[in-house]
Image 1 (cartoon, one colour):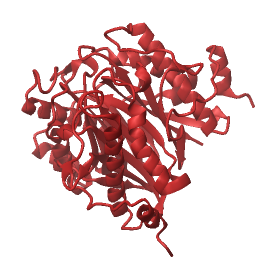
Image 2: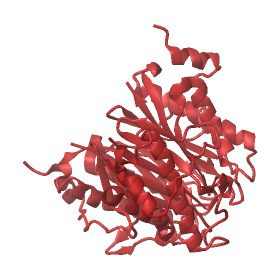
Image 3: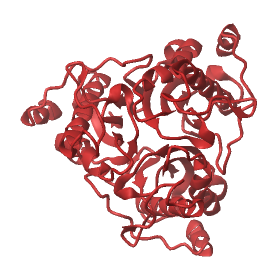
Length: 155
Length: 155
Length: 155
């Protein structure tokens, strides 16, 4: 059987990275029942935070969206490992939590987070329709511009 | 059988709005097993954010509480849809997450969030007793003063 | 049978406090299925917030770590009550959420939160390996420097 999600990823031109090791004393994901809770992912690319700074100041909207997209790609890399390599076991993207580093005047958090949400839909289709909470924060670990955590249901 | 929660809502003088459409590419709620994860709700009223600004600056405490209450009413509207219209299927308000837009000096987040928690108790009684996390944030989508997300158990 | 977790706590020199009463209208934890959702805990010690202020300003890194550790001890006190007194019923620390009150320039959130994560590993061993999300916030209830919430699986 074709690996449908992997085919979709290839169509989108997305290569999953090696799942990032946590920067501290915890693990990237925990499976409990049929749920996978994945640790907050930073926009790491080749081992470095690819977008640092704050929305509304040094980080333009589009770059924030790319950061959110990168966070979701990193979530996918963890999720694939949680699924023993088979992303077709994913039954639902249940919830994404988005944290946007920004100045107090910033109000376009939702648009930033769409970088992650749009990709979830593109990769998983109907199964990618998720609940979501997006908020601003004054700062994130390693000066990352965006952090996204995820909850998934798998078979 | 009387619809007990609806009767309670009527007693409290609360009319549930049309569930708000997400302001971005996601869905208002996801059901997984017997849990319903509901997206962070803003204090929308008649399609507009009813309370904008920050606690400790332009938003007085009481107005913040009203915003939290409004967020919970909007959670209820989504929850009702998730229950196929029957709020008596709710077995437990499991967890509320409250995000309070505020200045760094603000310390009364818990009192603001009680606007949501008190209403949960009033509507659901013992089943409304929930776990809760309340934190400050520098800003929220659309300049909302408060955002509340919810996790519920349904039958 | 020896109470293994209690023995480990004794070895670590940790005495669990009386579980803190919520500072508002909610409950400390909710059990749903085999999951326990525990409300965000402040670094309360003998009824007072033991570490107030912000990382990157008045609170040094080490004190922030102690605050995170104290939050986790308070989570344990609630968890013990949720388990009817028997911490050996804990099957997994599923997820910790850490909120670090800090100035916008702060970037060492992960190190602060390790105060909680390291203790989870020390107390529960392999079962203590958890998913984690850590973010900065401008302020927390009662001016606490750190707040930690937890999700646990129990038998």
